[in-house]
Image (cartoon, rainbow over all chains, first blue to last red; front, top):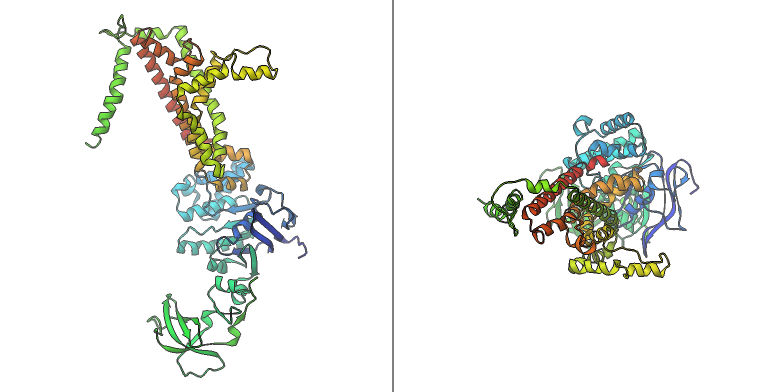
Length: 338
Length: 272
């Protein structure tokens, strides 16, 4: 990749080791300015270390690749020199400071005049939809999880960072609040045109919010692409099973999404489908869909996701003889795992 | 009803002895110790002569200096221990280790260090820094050194306890927001360590105020501190009312210190 000045973040074969353990292994990626970019992977895959490298809390291994922000090599810059904002996993609000003082902290460190600080703090609180009059003088301990999250966002955004780094910021929230915040974060990214780099282990979250996703496993980036591209065309068996659900066929060389598998009564004409007879082994009720596990006569099992439109749960019962069918084009070939 | 055992305990072991001391302090002294019936403020008036006021001032000064030195030495040590990973336990044991030996023995050890032929003077002479041994023992400086040495663990441990709980992400958050190391210390570490600093300062200041063994052994028999004065009044001088009055003066100082420190702790936020 030639160095481009437009990229907000550019990593070129960056490594980070802790003793003998490689936490980030030769990672190269480019994040465009204004993009909502997610780093997705299981715990321990190195995604948080990657974020901390961008933030400046970690320095790349000597002799490994470069890290550029908006074209500048920042390997030796401290976090506050990089003009990046960070939202921490458990928010890291200062427990001894009120909401107002928490948000004002960075402005005070920059020696802004007090009236300026007051108006910026107020604007930042309004931006994250916390009524300044109500919340200004509260202490972090008096806030709910969602409110703390908003304060942490306001505290980072008030400095107008070029890049906002978010480390699993919604992990501690309940599902309803999480969905709400997903929409709001996305809207913030759009209105502020700030680059968002978002670390998560929640594939659904990454698919919903991101412009692009980098999938990480074992310290390496396995695949980078739009949510649709990563979901529809997973590169490896790991990506196929980590993002969404997938049947792995032909010795893990082919992925088939369960929602692409159709279940037919025995004897139905194949109609150009690849078809395999089998017996229903179990059904898992999921509300909007039912997952049917079919034991194939030829050996192995295949999972099919069936809409629950009938309203009476699974249309199939364990022991039913059926035929599982799919279009050959729904099968997606996979690369071998490195 | 449930509070009865607690209240009873307090009355027998705390309120009653204190009332007794208060009563003694306003009674005439008996010729061979003890007190006689009557009521007088003589003991308190006696306190207002320069020699006793000097003792009072010196006691305050030494105790404050001891607290300040313990804080200056103890905070960095506590911080280092709280960040020392797997060495933590060992280092904590080393801090507590001196407390397992008798305070008396440790004070005598200070004498061996500080006397004219002691280790400190031997070293100073050997390196040629001085030609003649310095008079270190039986000075206020020796008393201060003894007090700091004796009370340092009581400063380190509570500060360590509050630093141990400090979430490192808070320091990173402060750094991301532009706070340099000094600002992180002042605005994040110190305010959050304040409960430990207040507790440690009280644990050092209060017993330093009442100490009599250290000034007696290291300061020479010069009634350097209030503790020596009180001890002397109850033993050699046989002036129980005066000793009681001095004890109450000391109690008042302790209470004032507690109130002042608690006030300081509640204002910790303004520090940031």
